[in-house]
Image 1 (cartoon, rainbow, N blue to C red):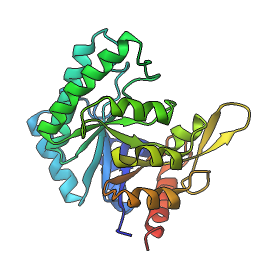
Image 2 (image 1 turned 90 degrees about the vertical axis):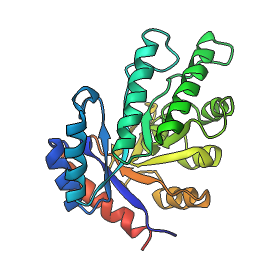
Image 3 (image 1 turned 45 degrees about the vertical axis):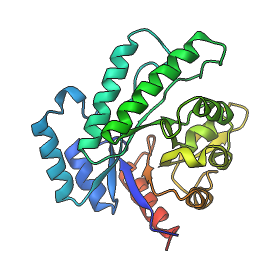
Length: 262
C-alpha cells in the first residue's frame, strides 16, 4: 500500500492561519486544507497574498490538500445562484493557483428529487462548475453529508463523466446512519478527497458524536484499503472540530494514519 498523503484542516487547529500552518508542519503533516470563506476569504486573496501564502507553505514543506468553499445554500436554490457559481469558480482558480486539485462543498442538502424543478437547476449548475473545474485543474467534490449514498450516486449518473467528484466524510455518514464502507462501494471511483474523522453514533438520537480518529466506529484501516482498491491517490485530511485539545488530538491522528501504512 502506498504512503498516504496526510493533510490537516487548518480550521480544526483553532489557531491563526500562519500559526496553524507552522503547527501542521510540526505535527508531521504533508499539507493543509484551507477554507476560502471564513479563514481566507477570496476577496483578500490577491496575487500578492497568493505569492506570500505559497512561500509560507514552501518554507514549511507543505502543500494544499484541498480548499473548502462552503456556501450558505446549495446549487439547487435559484436565489442568487449566479453569485454562488461565480464564487465557486473563483475558488477553483485560487485552488489551482495554490496547487490544490479539489474544492469541497455541500452541493445540496437534501438533494432534490428527479421530478423536482430544482433538480435541473442543480444539474445545470454542476455541469457549468465541472467545465470550469476541468479548465483550471481544480474539480468540485461534493461533501458526503446526510444525503443518502444511493441518491448521490444517482445524481453523479446524470452528469457528464469525470465532472463532479465526491469528498468522503466518514463522521457525517455515521451521523446519518450510513456506512462509510458502503459509500465507498457505491462512490469509490468518484472519490477525489477524503476527510480522516471519526464518530460514535448516539443511540436513539439519529446523530453521532465526533471522537478522536481511531476511537470511533469509522473503520479507517478498512477505508484506506477500500479506497486503495479503487487506485485512490488523493489526500486524507484530518478534521477535528470538537476536541478540547485539538493540537494533541490531531497530532495523534497523524501518527495513527502513518501507522496504517507502515
